[in-house]
Image (cartoon, rainbow, N blue to C red):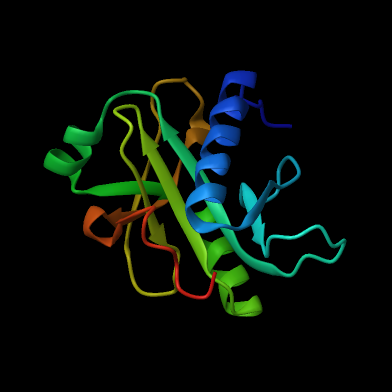
Length: 156
């Protein structure tokens, strides 16, 4: 079994980001079970037991202040192709939006749609943990695809 790197601090950051999304988009949002393909499920607000799913999200929190590097250097944000593929499949199958939400350490928080359009794919990943499974096919999402949280995804 693969080693888990997520810490309690990571989960707290995800919870804070979900709370921000809940407030901006006025949706119910819940963390998915461990090892689920995407981090969270969004649904209509309300207290009923059968909350209609309206979307999915993959959440990222950049611990290093790489906003200027991402904007100036790469001009894109990298996400594992397996997560992208799951988002595209969920969105296509259920006809609901799936989004990538990224919060940089400087506080900038943006989202981009995960959609089935062509994207650049590289074999890349993390190289700082000496874990060969951290390198994999990755989708490079151009930063111009990202929007502020004040803009709610269509269909959500």
